[in-house]
Amino acid sequence: MKKLILLSFLLSAVCLRADGLPNQPYLYAIGFAKRSVSADQLRIRFSLEAREKESVRATAIVEERAKKVLALLATLSITEQDISAASVSTQLKYDEEKGKEFLGYDVEREFSVLLRDVARYGELAKALLDVPVDGLSLEKIGYSKEKSLATELEEDARKDARKNADRIAASFGMEVVGVYAISPVSFSELARRWPYDFEDFGYAAGGRASKSQSLSFVIPPFTVSREAHVIFLIRPENQPNQPPLQTPASGTPAAGAPVAPPSGAAGR
Image (cartoon, rainbow, N blue to C red; front, side, top):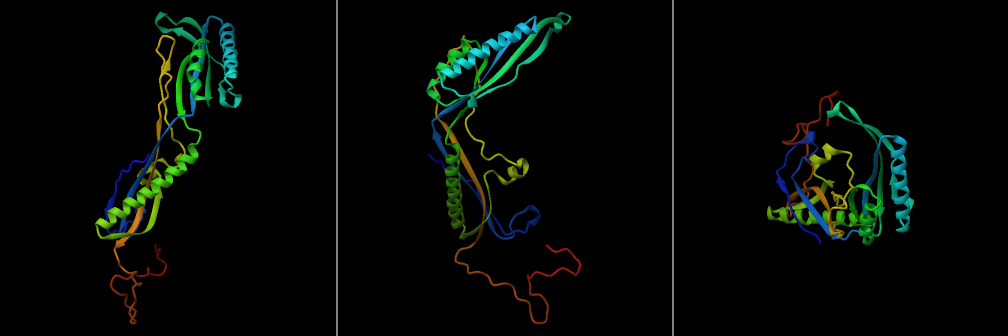
C-alpha cells in the first residue's frame, strides 16, 4: 500500500552556490511510499532482580532465575545467538529518609531476547512472569525481510517524487531535465544529522507487563515507510538547448558572459 503525499516548491533561477543549490531553475519534490506488514519477529526485554542483606544471597537468587530463563528459552527453540544477557550488577541501597539506613544489596541482570516465532509470544510472556522476571516489555516489533522491503520502498518513493515533479513542472509550463540531488531525508535534516542511519525503521512498542495486568498478545500490523527528497533541474517546455555565450572578436565579453578572474585571484 502506498500513499502519495507531495510537498514541492517551484523556485526561480538563483545563484546560491554557497548553499549548495543549483544556479538554474529547479524544483524540490518529495516522494512517499509505505506498506503495511505483519510482524514476524519480536524483541523482548526484561530483567532479573533481587534485594537481600547479603550480596551473595541476592546474587544466588538472580543466577537461579537466570538458569530457569535459559531453560525456558531452550524449550521454545530460541538459540544463543538470539539471546543477549548482561553481566550481573550490584548496588548498595540505603533509605535516605531514615538516616541512610542500609536496605540491602540490589542485584540485577538484564536480558534481551529475539523471538522469531511471533505466535509463541503469549506463551513466552506468561512463562517469564512465572519465573518471575521484572520489567517485561515488548521492545520492538520487526520484520525479517526489512532490507529487501526498504529497497523496494526507496525505489517507489523515488518514482513518486519524479511523478510529482513532472506534474508540478507541467502546470507551470516547465519540464524536468535532470536531477541535482537525492536524499532519503530533507536536506536540512541531512546536514544536521549526518551521518544518518538510513536502515533504521520498524515499529517500537513500549510498556511493562506484570501478573496483575491483563496481557494482550495480539500483535497488530505495522507500517514501514520511505521518503525521497529530490532536487530536479527544470526548464521551459520545448526549449532547445542554449548555445554557449560567445565573446566578440574585440575581446569584450558579451552581455551576461562569465568574466575570467584576474591573474592570481581564486575563481569558482
